Length: 514
Image (tube, rainbow, N blue to C red):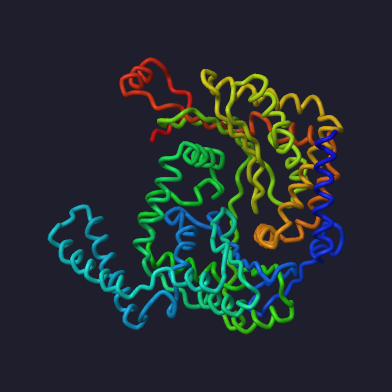
Protein backbone atom coordinates (compact mmCIF):
# COMPACT_ATOMS: atom_id res chain seq x y z
CA UNK A 1 0.00 0.00 0.00
CA UNK A 2 2.84 2.39 0.78
CA UNK A 3 4.39 2.08 -2.67
CA UNK A 4 0.98 2.57 -4.27
CA UNK A 5 0.46 5.79 -2.26
CA UNK A 6 3.89 7.16 -3.20
CA UNK A 7 3.22 6.55 -6.89
CA UNK A 8 -0.13 8.34 -6.65
CA UNK A 9 1.44 11.36 -4.88
CA UNK A 10 4.21 11.63 -7.48
CA UNK A 11 1.62 11.44 -10.25
CA UNK A 12 -0.45 14.16 -8.60
CA UNK A 13 2.51 16.51 -8.09
CA UNK A 14 3.66 16.09 -11.70
CA UNK A 15 0.12 16.65 -12.92
CA UNK A 16 -0.18 19.92 -10.94
CA UNK A 17 3.05 21.21 -12.51
CA UNK A 18 1.79 20.43 -16.01
CA UNK A 19 -1.70 21.76 -15.38
CA UNK A 20 -0.53 25.09 -14.00
CA UNK A 21 1.92 25.57 -16.90
CA UNK A 22 -0.98 25.51 -19.37
CA UNK A 23 -0.08 22.25 -21.11
CA UNK A 24 -3.42 20.65 -20.19
CA UNK A 25 -6.70 22.46 -20.94
CA UNK A 26 -8.54 19.73 -18.99
CA UNK A 27 -7.11 17.08 -16.65
CA UNK A 28 -4.73 14.91 -18.69
CA UNK A 29 -5.87 16.43 -22.00
CA UNK A 30 -3.28 18.12 -24.21
CA UNK A 31 -4.35 21.45 -25.69
CA UNK A 32 -2.77 20.89 -29.12
CA UNK A 33 -3.57 23.38 -31.88
CA UNK A 34 -3.68 22.13 -35.47
CA UNK A 35 -3.02 23.88 -38.75
CA UNK A 36 -2.84 22.33 -42.23
CA UNK A 37 -1.13 24.07 -45.14
CA UNK A 38 -2.64 23.97 -48.65
CA UNK A 39 0.05 21.45 -49.67
CA UNK A 40 -1.15 19.05 -46.97
CA UNK A 41 1.64 19.63 -44.43
CA UNK A 42 0.18 19.33 -40.92
CA UNK A 43 1.43 21.53 -38.07
CA UNK A 44 0.72 20.52 -34.46
CA UNK A 45 1.47 23.15 -31.80
CA UNK A 46 1.53 23.00 -28.02
CA UNK A 47 2.53 26.04 -25.96
CA UNK A 48 4.76 25.49 -22.93
CA UNK A 49 6.25 28.73 -21.66
CA UNK A 50 8.39 27.59 -18.73
CA UNK A 51 11.71 27.86 -20.64
CA UNK A 52 12.60 29.78 -23.86
CA UNK A 53 13.07 26.61 -25.91
CA UNK A 54 11.06 25.00 -28.69
CA UNK A 55 11.20 21.25 -29.30
CA UNK A 56 10.64 20.62 -33.00
CA UNK A 57 9.91 17.37 -34.79
CA UNK A 58 9.44 16.68 -38.48
CA UNK A 59 7.95 13.23 -38.87
CA UNK A 60 7.25 11.43 -42.12
CA UNK A 61 4.56 8.77 -42.33
CA UNK A 62 6.85 6.22 -43.92
CA UNK A 63 8.91 3.40 -42.45
CA UNK A 64 10.14 -0.07 -43.23
CA UNK A 65 6.54 -1.27 -43.59
CA UNK A 66 6.32 0.77 -46.81
CA UNK A 67 9.34 -0.90 -48.43
CA UNK A 68 9.44 -3.91 -50.74
CA UNK A 69 11.83 -6.80 -51.30
CA UNK A 70 14.89 -5.47 -53.07
CA UNK A 71 14.93 -2.13 -51.25
CA UNK A 72 14.42 -3.15 -47.61
CA UNK A 73 16.37 -0.76 -45.42
CA UNK A 74 15.88 2.22 -47.75
CA UNK A 75 13.91 4.13 -45.07
CA UNK A 76 16.81 3.87 -42.65
CA UNK A 77 19.39 4.62 -45.34
CA UNK A 78 17.45 7.70 -46.35
CA UNK A 79 17.38 8.89 -42.75
CA UNK A 80 21.20 8.95 -42.96
CA UNK A 81 21.09 10.80 -46.30
CA UNK A 82 18.94 13.59 -44.84
CA UNK A 83 22.01 14.80 -42.93
CA UNK A 84 24.26 15.00 -46.00
CA UNK A 85 23.09 18.45 -47.02
CA UNK A 86 21.43 20.26 -49.90
CA UNK A 87 22.49 22.36 -52.84
CA UNK A 88 23.63 25.09 -50.46
CA UNK A 89 24.57 23.15 -47.31
CA UNK A 90 27.24 20.45 -47.18
CA UNK A 91 29.14 21.62 -50.25
CA UNK A 92 31.74 24.24 -51.13
CA UNK A 93 30.51 24.50 -54.74
CA UNK A 94 27.44 22.54 -55.88
CA UNK A 95 27.91 23.55 -59.53
CA UNK A 96 31.31 21.86 -59.47
CA UNK A 97 30.03 18.93 -57.40
CA UNK A 98 26.96 18.04 -59.52
CA UNK A 99 28.79 16.71 -62.62
CA UNK A 100 31.14 14.73 -60.39
CA UNK A 101 28.19 13.13 -58.57
CA UNK A 102 26.65 12.20 -61.93
CA UNK A 103 29.93 10.71 -63.13
CA UNK A 104 30.30 8.75 -59.89
CA UNK A 105 26.88 7.18 -60.51
CA UNK A 106 27.78 6.27 -64.09
CA UNK A 107 31.03 4.61 -63.04
CA UNK A 108 29.42 2.69 -60.16
CA UNK A 109 26.74 1.33 -62.51
CA UNK A 110 29.33 0.39 -65.14
CA UNK A 111 31.50 -1.47 -62.61
CA UNK A 112 28.48 -3.18 -61.06
CA UNK A 113 27.15 -4.37 -64.42
CA UNK A 114 30.52 -5.86 -65.36
CA UNK A 115 30.95 -7.59 -61.98
CA UNK A 116 27.45 -9.07 -62.19
CA UNK A 117 27.72 -10.15 -65.81
CA UNK A 118 28.76 -13.69 -64.83
CA UNK A 119 31.98 -13.41 -66.81
CA UNK A 120 33.64 -10.31 -65.36
CA UNK A 121 36.71 -9.00 -67.18
CA UNK A 122 39.18 -7.50 -64.68
CA UNK A 123 40.71 -5.30 -67.36
CA UNK A 124 37.31 -3.74 -68.09
CA UNK A 125 36.94 -2.94 -64.40
CA UNK A 126 40.41 -1.56 -63.71
CA UNK A 127 40.03 1.65 -65.72
CA UNK A 128 36.62 2.75 -64.37
CA UNK A 129 37.69 1.85 -60.83
CA UNK A 130 40.75 4.07 -61.17
CA UNK A 131 38.63 6.92 -62.55
CA UNK A 132 36.08 6.38 -59.76
CA UNK A 133 38.77 6.85 -57.13
CA UNK A 134 39.85 10.13 -58.77
CA UNK A 135 36.25 11.36 -58.94
CA UNK A 136 35.70 10.53 -55.27
CA UNK A 137 38.87 12.32 -54.28
CA UNK A 138 37.58 15.49 -55.97
CA UNK A 139 34.20 15.04 -54.31
CA UNK A 140 35.77 14.73 -50.87
CA UNK A 141 37.52 18.05 -51.42
CA UNK A 142 34.16 19.72 -52.11
CA UNK A 143 32.17 18.26 -49.22
CA UNK A 144 31.60 20.23 -46.01
CA UNK A 145 31.15 17.45 -43.48
CA UNK A 146 28.14 17.61 -41.12
CA UNK A 147 27.39 21.24 -41.93
CA UNK A 148 23.72 21.00 -40.92
CA UNK A 149 24.68 19.55 -37.53
CA UNK A 150 27.36 22.20 -37.04
CA UNK A 151 24.97 25.05 -37.81
CA UNK A 152 22.44 23.82 -35.27
CA UNK A 153 25.09 23.29 -32.60
CA UNK A 154 26.59 26.76 -33.11
CA UNK A 155 23.15 28.28 -32.56
CA UNK A 156 22.30 26.42 -29.37
CA UNK A 157 20.62 23.38 -30.87
CA UNK A 158 20.42 20.17 -28.85
CA UNK A 159 18.78 16.76 -29.07
CA UNK A 160 19.75 16.57 -32.74
CA UNK A 161 18.87 13.09 -33.89
CA UNK A 162 16.71 10.95 -36.14
CA UNK A 163 15.09 7.53 -35.94
CA UNK A 164 13.55 5.06 -38.35
CA UNK A 165 10.82 2.68 -37.25
CA UNK A 166 8.42 0.28 -38.92
CA UNK A 167 5.71 2.93 -39.39
CA UNK A 168 7.51 6.28 -39.48
CA UNK A 169 10.72 8.27 -39.72
CA UNK A 170 11.41 10.94 -37.11
CA UNK A 171 13.73 13.98 -37.04
CA UNK A 172 14.44 15.75 -33.74
CA UNK A 173 15.74 19.21 -32.91
CA UNK A 174 15.46 21.42 -29.79
CA UNK A 175 16.32 25.10 -30.27
CA UNK A 176 16.25 28.45 -28.48
CA UNK A 177 13.06 30.25 -29.43
CA UNK A 178 14.98 33.05 -31.20
CA UNK A 179 16.43 30.51 -33.68
CA UNK A 180 13.13 29.30 -35.12
CA UNK A 181 13.69 30.95 -38.49
CA UNK A 182 17.04 29.18 -38.85
CA UNK A 183 15.24 25.86 -38.28
CA UNK A 184 12.52 26.70 -40.82
CA UNK A 185 15.10 27.67 -43.43
CA UNK A 186 17.26 24.56 -42.92
CA UNK A 187 14.42 22.05 -42.74
CA UNK A 188 12.44 23.41 -45.68
CA UNK A 189 15.63 23.36 -47.74
CA UNK A 190 16.18 19.70 -46.80
CA UNK A 191 12.62 18.91 -47.91
CA UNK A 192 13.03 20.82 -51.19
CA UNK A 193 16.65 20.49 -52.26
CA UNK A 194 18.19 17.40 -50.66
CA UNK A 195 21.33 16.09 -52.38
CA UNK A 196 22.25 12.41 -52.08
CA UNK A 197 25.94 13.06 -51.63
CA UNK A 198 28.27 10.49 -50.04
CA UNK A 199 25.59 7.91 -50.91
CA UNK A 200 27.87 4.93 -51.48
CA UNK A 201 30.06 5.51 -48.43
CA UNK A 202 26.95 5.95 -46.27
CA UNK A 203 25.54 2.71 -47.65
CA UNK A 204 28.70 1.04 -46.34
CA UNK A 205 28.14 2.72 -42.96
CA UNK A 206 24.65 1.20 -42.78
CA UNK A 207 26.10 -2.19 -43.68
CA UNK A 208 28.50 -1.88 -40.76
CA UNK A 209 25.63 -0.83 -38.51
CA UNK A 210 23.71 -3.94 -39.52
CA UNK A 211 26.75 -6.11 -38.83
CA UNK A 212 27.22 -4.69 -35.33
CA UNK A 213 23.59 -4.41 -34.21
CA UNK A 214 22.12 -7.53 -35.83
CA UNK A 215 24.52 -10.03 -37.32
CA UNK A 216 26.95 -9.89 -34.37
CA UNK A 217 24.30 -9.26 -31.72
CA UNK A 218 22.49 -12.26 -30.21
CA UNK A 219 19.53 -10.15 -29.17
CA UNK A 220 19.30 -8.33 -32.53
CA UNK A 221 19.55 -11.58 -34.45
CA UNK A 222 16.93 -13.26 -32.28
CA UNK A 223 14.36 -10.48 -32.77
CA UNK A 224 15.05 -10.29 -36.51
CA UNK A 225 14.40 -14.01 -36.96
CA UNK A 226 11.38 -13.91 -34.63
CA UNK A 227 9.70 -11.26 -36.79
CA UNK A 228 10.63 -13.03 -40.00
CA UNK A 229 8.79 -16.16 -38.82
CA UNK A 230 5.93 -14.45 -36.95
CA UNK A 231 4.87 -12.59 -40.10
CA UNK A 232 4.72 -14.65 -43.28
CA UNK A 233 3.03 -12.06 -45.51
CA UNK A 234 2.95 -8.61 -43.92
CA UNK A 235 6.02 -6.34 -44.34
CA UNK A 236 6.51 -6.16 -40.57
CA UNK A 237 8.44 -9.36 -41.25
CA UNK A 238 11.56 -7.64 -42.54
CA UNK A 239 13.99 -5.68 -40.36
CA UNK A 240 13.96 -1.89 -40.23
CA UNK A 241 17.67 -1.82 -41.05
CA UNK A 242 17.04 -4.04 -44.10
CA UNK A 243 18.38 -7.35 -45.37
CA UNK A 244 22.10 -7.47 -46.13
CA UNK A 245 21.81 -8.06 -49.88
CA UNK A 246 19.27 -5.25 -50.28
CA UNK A 247 21.44 -2.72 -48.47
CA UNK A 248 24.41 -3.71 -50.61
CA UNK A 249 22.48 -3.24 -53.85
CA UNK A 250 20.11 -0.32 -53.26
CA UNK A 251 20.78 2.25 -55.97
CA UNK A 252 20.77 6.00 -55.74
CA UNK A 253 17.99 6.11 -58.35
CA UNK A 254 15.76 3.87 -56.20
CA UNK A 255 16.49 6.01 -53.14
CA UNK A 256 15.68 9.21 -55.03
CA UNK A 257 12.39 7.74 -56.29
CA UNK A 258 11.54 6.75 -52.72
CA UNK A 259 12.20 10.32 -51.54
CA UNK A 260 9.85 11.83 -54.13
CA UNK A 261 7.05 9.40 -53.27
CA UNK A 262 7.13 9.56 -49.48
CA UNK A 263 8.98 12.74 -48.40
CA UNK A 264 6.20 15.05 -49.53
CA UNK A 265 4.56 17.71 -47.35
CA UNK A 266 1.21 15.89 -47.49
CA UNK A 267 2.91 12.85 -45.91
CA UNK A 268 4.62 14.82 -43.14
CA UNK A 269 3.76 16.40 -39.80
CA UNK A 270 5.60 19.16 -37.94
CA UNK A 271 5.32 19.17 -34.16
CA UNK A 272 6.29 22.23 -32.13
CA UNK A 273 6.20 22.25 -28.33
CA UNK A 274 7.56 25.13 -26.27
CA UNK A 275 7.80 28.88 -25.84
CA UNK A 276 6.29 30.33 -29.01
CA UNK A 277 3.18 32.07 -30.30
CA UNK A 278 1.06 29.79 -32.55
CA UNK A 279 0.15 32.62 -34.95
CA UNK A 280 3.86 33.41 -35.45
CA UNK A 281 4.65 29.72 -35.92
CA UNK A 282 1.96 29.35 -38.59
CA UNK A 283 3.29 32.40 -40.44
CA UNK A 284 6.85 31.04 -40.31
CA UNK A 285 5.88 27.57 -41.56
CA UNK A 286 3.75 29.04 -44.35
CA UNK A 287 6.65 31.26 -45.42
CA UNK A 288 9.23 28.49 -45.68
CA UNK A 289 7.25 25.30 -46.36
CA UNK A 290 4.17 26.63 -48.17
CA UNK A 291 5.71 26.60 -51.65
CA UNK A 292 6.73 22.91 -51.55
CA UNK A 293 4.53 20.92 -53.92
CA UNK A 294 2.42 18.08 -52.61
CA UNK A 295 2.59 14.66 -54.26
CA UNK A 296 0.06 11.94 -54.95
CA UNK A 297 -0.93 10.23 -51.73
CA UNK A 298 1.54 7.37 -51.16
CA UNK A 299 0.05 3.88 -51.17
CA UNK A 300 -0.91 2.16 -47.93
CA UNK A 301 0.07 -1.42 -47.29
CA UNK A 302 -2.64 -3.71 -48.66
CA UNK A 303 -1.23 -7.03 -47.49
CA UNK A 304 -3.07 -8.46 -44.50
CA UNK A 305 -1.28 -11.03 -42.35
CA UNK A 306 -3.35 -14.23 -42.50
CA UNK A 307 -4.59 -15.75 -39.28
CA UNK A 308 -1.97 -18.02 -37.75
CA UNK A 309 -3.16 -21.63 -37.67
CA UNK A 310 -0.59 -23.19 -35.37
CA UNK A 311 2.55 -22.68 -33.36
CA UNK A 312 5.73 -21.84 -35.29
CA UNK A 313 9.21 -22.46 -33.95
CA UNK A 314 12.66 -21.45 -35.12
CA UNK A 315 16.14 -22.12 -33.73
CA UNK A 316 19.01 -19.77 -34.42
CA UNK A 317 22.53 -21.04 -33.88
CA UNK A 318 24.89 -18.43 -32.50
CA UNK A 319 27.95 -18.39 -30.31
CA UNK A 320 26.36 -16.83 -27.22
CA UNK A 321 24.34 -17.64 -24.15
CA UNK A 322 20.80 -18.82 -24.93
CA UNK A 323 17.76 -16.55 -25.24
CA UNK A 324 14.11 -17.17 -25.98
CA UNK A 325 11.53 -14.88 -27.59
CA UNK A 326 7.83 -15.64 -27.96
CA UNK A 327 5.41 -13.48 -29.92
CA UNK A 328 1.62 -13.42 -30.30
CA UNK A 329 -0.37 -11.52 -32.92
CA UNK A 330 -2.44 -8.60 -31.56
CA UNK A 331 -4.54 -5.84 -33.21
CA UNK A 332 -3.48 -2.48 -34.59
CA UNK A 333 -3.55 0.94 -32.88
CA UNK A 334 -7.05 2.06 -32.01
CA UNK A 335 -8.38 -1.40 -31.18
CA UNK A 336 -10.07 -1.42 -27.75
CA UNK A 337 -8.23 -4.58 -26.63
CA UNK A 338 -4.88 -2.78 -26.67
CA UNK A 339 -5.59 -1.06 -23.35
CA UNK A 340 -6.09 -4.39 -21.56
CA UNK A 341 -2.95 -5.68 -23.30
CA UNK A 342 -1.05 -2.64 -21.96
CA UNK A 343 -2.18 -3.52 -18.46
CA UNK A 344 -1.28 -7.18 -19.06
CA UNK A 345 2.28 -6.35 -20.15
CA UNK A 346 2.77 -4.13 -17.09
CA UNK A 347 1.32 -6.79 -14.81
CA UNK A 348 3.78 -9.33 -16.18
CA UNK A 349 6.99 -7.36 -16.30
CA UNK A 350 6.96 -3.80 -14.93
CA UNK A 351 9.30 -3.64 -11.98
CA UNK A 352 10.36 -5.99 -9.21
CA UNK A 353 6.78 -6.70 -8.14
CA UNK A 354 5.78 -7.92 -11.60
CA UNK A 355 4.78 -11.54 -12.02
CA UNK A 356 7.62 -12.63 -14.30
CA UNK A 357 10.25 -11.01 -12.08
CA UNK A 358 8.91 -12.41 -8.81
CA UNK A 359 8.32 -15.91 -10.19
CA UNK A 360 11.22 -16.53 -12.57
CA UNK A 361 13.98 -14.30 -11.20
CA UNK A 362 13.33 -14.10 -7.44
CA UNK A 363 11.54 -17.31 -6.47
CA UNK A 364 12.53 -19.99 -8.99
CA UNK A 365 15.82 -18.26 -9.93
CA UNK A 366 15.70 -19.80 -13.40
CA UNK A 367 16.14 -16.58 -15.42
CA UNK A 368 18.40 -13.55 -15.41
CA UNK A 369 15.94 -11.56 -17.52
CA UNK A 370 12.23 -11.92 -18.32
CA UNK A 371 10.23 -9.21 -20.00
CA UNK A 372 6.91 -8.78 -21.83
CA UNK A 373 5.77 -5.90 -24.02
CA UNK A 374 3.06 -5.10 -26.56
CA UNK A 375 3.95 -3.35 -29.79
CA UNK A 376 1.47 -0.69 -30.95
CA UNK A 377 1.60 -0.51 -34.74
CA UNK A 378 -0.28 1.13 -37.58
CA UNK A 379 -1.12 -2.45 -38.59
CA UNK A 380 -1.67 -5.53 -36.38
CA UNK A 381 1.52 -6.16 -34.43
CA UNK A 382 2.73 -8.43 -31.61
CA UNK A 383 2.78 -9.09 -27.87
CA UNK A 384 6.27 -10.40 -27.11
CA UNK A 385 8.14 -12.17 -24.30
CA UNK A 386 11.95 -12.07 -24.10
CA UNK A 387 13.85 -14.14 -21.53
CA UNK A 388 17.32 -15.50 -20.77
CA UNK A 389 17.85 -18.58 -18.57
CA UNK A 390 20.13 -18.53 -15.55
CA UNK A 391 22.77 -21.29 -15.77
CA UNK A 392 22.45 -24.22 -15.34
CA UNK A 393 18.73 -23.88 -16.15
CA UNK A 394 17.68 -24.52 -19.75
CA UNK A 395 15.56 -22.52 -22.18
CA UNK A 396 12.84 -25.19 -22.01
CA UNK A 397 12.38 -24.54 -18.29
CA UNK A 398 12.09 -20.80 -18.85
CA UNK A 399 9.61 -21.31 -21.70
CA UNK A 400 7.46 -23.58 -19.55
CA UNK A 401 7.47 -21.04 -16.71
CA UNK A 402 6.25 -18.27 -19.04
CA UNK A 403 3.34 -20.47 -20.12
CA UNK A 404 2.55 -21.18 -16.47
CA UNK A 405 2.19 -17.46 -15.78
CA UNK A 406 -0.03 -17.07 -18.84
CA UNK A 407 -2.28 -19.93 -17.74
CA UNK A 408 -2.63 -18.44 -14.25
CA UNK A 409 -3.99 -15.24 -15.78
CA UNK A 410 -6.40 -17.20 -17.96
CA UNK A 411 -7.90 -18.92 -14.93
CA UNK A 412 -7.52 -16.41 -12.08
CA UNK A 413 -8.01 -12.66 -12.51
CA UNK A 414 -5.52 -10.21 -11.01
CA UNK A 415 -6.55 -8.89 -7.60
CA UNK A 416 -8.10 -5.44 -7.22
CA UNK A 417 -4.94 -4.26 -5.43
CA UNK A 418 -2.69 -5.62 -8.17
CA UNK A 419 -4.80 -4.05 -10.92
CA UNK A 420 -4.88 -0.66 -9.19
CA UNK A 421 -1.11 -0.77 -8.65
CA UNK A 422 -0.59 -1.31 -12.37
CA UNK A 423 -2.93 1.54 -13.27
CA UNK A 424 -1.08 3.83 -10.86
CA UNK A 425 2.23 2.86 -12.46
CA UNK A 426 0.90 3.43 -15.98
CA UNK A 427 -0.50 6.82 -14.97
CA UNK A 428 2.78 7.86 -13.35
CA UNK A 429 4.79 6.70 -16.39
CA UNK A 430 2.35 8.43 -18.75
CA UNK A 431 2.60 11.79 -16.96
CA UNK A 432 6.36 11.46 -16.52
CA UNK A 433 6.75 10.97 -20.29
CA UNK A 434 4.82 14.19 -20.86
CA UNK A 435 6.70 16.20 -18.23
CA UNK A 436 9.18 17.72 -20.68
CA UNK A 437 8.66 19.60 -23.91
CA UNK A 438 10.80 17.00 -25.70
CA UNK A 439 8.71 14.14 -24.30
CA UNK A 440 5.49 15.85 -25.31
CA UNK A 441 6.77 16.51 -28.84
CA UNK A 442 7.90 12.90 -29.22
CA UNK A 443 4.58 11.44 -28.07
CA UNK A 444 2.42 13.80 -30.11
CA UNK A 445 4.44 13.13 -33.25
CA UNK A 446 4.61 9.38 -32.71
CA UNK A 447 0.87 8.89 -32.34
CA UNK A 448 0.08 11.27 -35.19
CA UNK A 449 2.19 9.04 -37.43
CA UNK A 450 0.42 5.90 -36.20
CA UNK A 451 -3.12 7.26 -36.27
CA UNK A 452 -3.95 10.49 -34.43
CA UNK A 453 -2.25 12.46 -31.65
CA UNK A 454 -5.58 12.46 -29.76
CA UNK A 455 -4.83 8.88 -28.73
CA UNK A 456 -2.84 10.51 -25.90
CA UNK A 457 -5.90 12.38 -24.63
CA UNK A 458 -7.98 9.21 -24.31
CA UNK A 459 -5.27 6.84 -23.08
CA UNK A 460 -5.67 7.22 -19.31
CA UNK A 461 -9.47 7.18 -19.49
CA UNK A 462 -9.34 3.89 -21.38
CA UNK A 463 -6.76 2.40 -19.02
CA UNK A 464 -8.94 3.34 -16.03
CA UNK A 465 -11.82 1.36 -17.55
CA UNK A 466 -9.83 -1.89 -17.85
CA UNK A 467 -11.16 -4.58 -15.51
CA UNK A 468 -9.65 -7.78 -14.18
CA UNK A 469 -12.05 -9.67 -16.47
CA UNK A 470 -10.70 -7.70 -19.45
CA UNK A 471 -7.16 -8.82 -18.59
CA UNK A 472 -8.31 -12.45 -18.41
CA UNK A 473 -10.25 -12.09 -21.67
CA UNK A 474 -7.36 -10.72 -23.77
CA UNK A 475 -5.00 -13.32 -22.28
CA UNK A 476 -7.35 -16.09 -23.38
CA UNK A 477 -8.00 -14.46 -26.75
CA UNK A 478 -4.47 -13.69 -27.91
CA UNK A 479 -1.94 -15.64 -25.82
CA UNK A 480 -2.77 -19.05 -27.29
CA UNK A 481 -0.56 -21.82 -28.63
CA UNK A 482 -1.95 -21.59 -32.17
CA UNK A 483 -1.23 -17.84 -32.22
CA UNK A 484 2.36 -17.96 -30.99
CA UNK A 485 5.79 -18.05 -32.57
CA UNK A 486 8.81 -19.19 -30.58
CA UNK A 487 12.40 -18.27 -31.45
CA UNK A 488 15.27 -19.80 -29.49
CA UNK A 489 18.90 -18.77 -29.68
CA UNK A 490 21.06 -21.83 -29.08
CA UNK A 491 24.82 -22.01 -28.71
CA UNK A 492 26.42 -23.03 -31.98
CA UNK A 493 27.72 -26.59 -31.79
CA UNK A 494 30.94 -27.86 -33.29
CA UNK A 495 30.73 -29.33 -36.80
CA UNK A 496 31.22 -32.98 -35.76
CA UNK A 497 28.49 -32.89 -33.14
CA UNK A 498 26.10 -31.09 -35.48
CA UNK A 499 26.75 -33.64 -38.23
CA UNK A 500 26.16 -36.55 -35.85
CA UNK A 501 22.89 -35.01 -34.63
CA UNK A 502 21.60 -34.53 -38.16
CA UNK A 503 22.41 -38.13 -39.10
CA UNK A 504 20.65 -39.60 -36.06
CA UNK A 505 17.50 -37.52 -35.88
CA UNK A 506 14.87 -35.88 -38.02
CA UNK A 507 14.84 -32.07 -37.69
CA UNK A 508 11.56 -30.80 -36.31
CA UNK A 509 12.42 -27.10 -36.30
CA UNK A 510 13.65 -24.67 -38.87
CA UNK A 511 17.23 -23.72 -38.04
CA UNK A 512 18.98 -20.56 -39.18
CA UNK A 513 22.73 -20.63 -38.62
CA UNK A 514 25.00 -17.59 -38.58
